[in-house]
Amino acid sequence: MKIVAIVGKQLVLTHKGEKDKFENSSELHYGGARGSNDLIGLDFCVVGKLTYPPNYFKFLSKVLGLECTDFTMKTQYVTYKGMSFTYTTFEDPMLQLLHFEQVEGDITQVAHRGRPVRFPCIVKLYTDFPIMQAEYIY
Image (cartoon, rainbow, N blue to C red; front, side, top):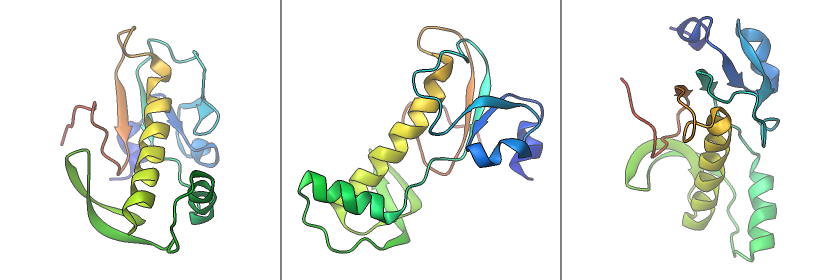
């Protein structure tokens, strides 16, 4: 079943270029939601994750002084914060950690637009990256 059918008429926060695929897209989107309070207390769905090209991590690793030479990404079985899963990432452990922290931070950023710590709301995540504080429903 396609994600569009699963979320139906629920409010959706996703990529800017994907908004038109959903019946009820938020004005907010990945990369354009930081600091917004527009979704406080609302139930909504977060679909997808923000992705960055390997050159972004090449730049970050240089700025951080990491000595990495292989910026090739491949699908592999990995463990992050005690959770094991299959994911497309770098083989270098430092780059992998940088990648995972970036993805986790982006997902958490958009999921917290509803301010679920202070206001009752349900935020459903539809992504292939596991988030520690999420309740998993299969």
